Image (cartoon, rainbow, N blue to C red; front, side):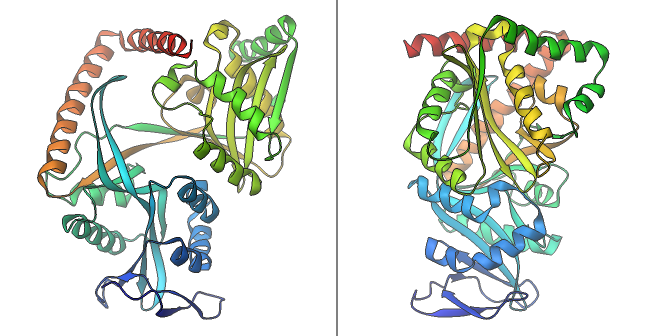
Length: 421
């Protein structure tokens, strides 16, 4: 039942005094399962900051679930409104699901080819957006609440961003809705991380002699041929110019054609400004003479460097500028005692396999509402995904998967180049 915003609850957290906050939507009380508060305004969310940060500390250091990061993302994109589920047991806050409500784009692809795209009203659960005690009882209660809510018209779909496939939450979602409302054949992505060595000497010592010589050659040949300059941006002062240069490089890459590139727009600027104010921003350019030819964007947060995106001028491909820039930044990270890990994010890539020291598997999964349009979209997505998996398996079996990917990426780069003219 929706409560008046003028009424207040009293919330107690460990080591804190009582504090009042605007009342949220609440699920019916059940002493065994607990009570769910639904927070849908920034005012309500600001009031539970101590609870959020306590649960965040217990759950680890994922930047996507940082309180300030979440607020900056919501404020920078007016299409989305907050949607937070906060679970209480015995009056004690014990778990959260962190998300937003707004348009959710559904892409159905065969390789890099989009064959169907639509947008549904949905709830997106942030990557890593499950904080606190996620026992089987906890996620069952929260998933039941979500499914009941979208069945009653809250949204058409709930999208869970990149859940670890070995986790309880992933298993629960895969079993929860009926077969018509459950996403099938979810794409499997590898998520790589790299432990940062004490020095570059240690980094090279961990590689084979051939790999060591190859990597050192990339840096030497670029510095021998060009006057190189590494430009770093960590503050708001120089962000405008450096972001513009990085976005210009990104616009010529195949990643940009797929929607994964770096753009110089209002929303991106606001997100990066917020990151700079929190001390997280790490945006680097590699200039050859007067020309910017490569960039790398990362956020440094709680001992981890989260690599967001990177790119290089495809016309300079033979110089391996992406690798050369990565090695320069790695050298800086080796000297920084406050960071010990690089998180490459989800998705497989040759450089991640080359440098990563551990990985796990993730998938984005959906829970569709039991209505005609969401079920139809799920059916189309299932059919396309099934066919795509079959085609990919065949290409891999024949040994032509890598060749197809390379040719497809060249076509996308040519398309980006012609569009930018």
